[in-house]
Length: 326
Image 1 (cartoon, rainbow, N blue to C red):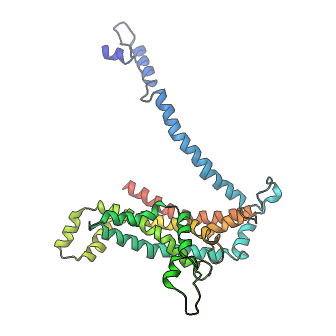
Image 2 (cartoon, helix red, strand yellow):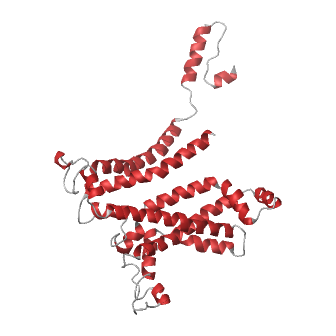
Image 3 (cartoon, rainbow, N blue to C red):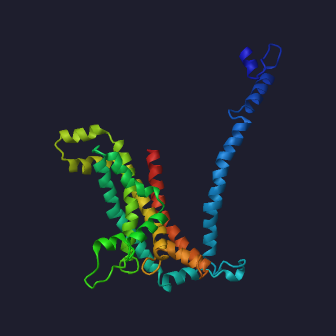
């Protein structure tokens, strides 16, 4: 009886109606909640504030860009019905714009370089440092240091290294057979490769840290079992370690793909994303935000980049959902 009274539930006495008492109990229980008013306010703020910024800074601009892609708006004044031109921006993009297909090829080359050159180097460094060699903490810090720098800063650093006269690289290599200095960033046949080397400097350290974290969580008993079965170190990694690291491998593939598609900072710092360094991201900026003021056309390029980027993201989310169901 005392417990019922402390919970706010009136005791059912012998003289009270059973139906009335049950109704009172249900009424009290209906108003009972584990969350206090303060808890509900805190929960609403914790969910509402991130949701607001997500809608305002991500989904809102995305929807606006999709709408702008069907217009010829130049960013000045309001949009009227006369600005809507349907699919003409996309038609011009695929058929008449001379920089779209080279930029797409550069993005694909960027992806192939990071995926098949920079990423394996990062994995190789992670495997070496996982052996607890002497000074491993120092090596990890050295290789990871570029990751803490923004890509814009990395672009500035490598622009100084590639400088024709005072650059470190030309001072080491010297002049060509024609007594000329190599113009790493001004030559359209070289600047893309120079930018790829610069972005790999950061990407290798990023992949190294991700893979090293996975290797630290790897069950050493599996290595011992493979060693007992007579497997070499290479065979152990290929047939035991690498398959077990599949979740990390998927994350690395998705991150590398997104990094290649959104590449912008280094190319824009070097030469504004022009003269052989055209990327889809730099085309967006050069059309929508530069002196051309073709906001609608730049938005069409942004929509194409969004559609391409959704591929690896959807594949990653689908895989995660399948794993959760299992």
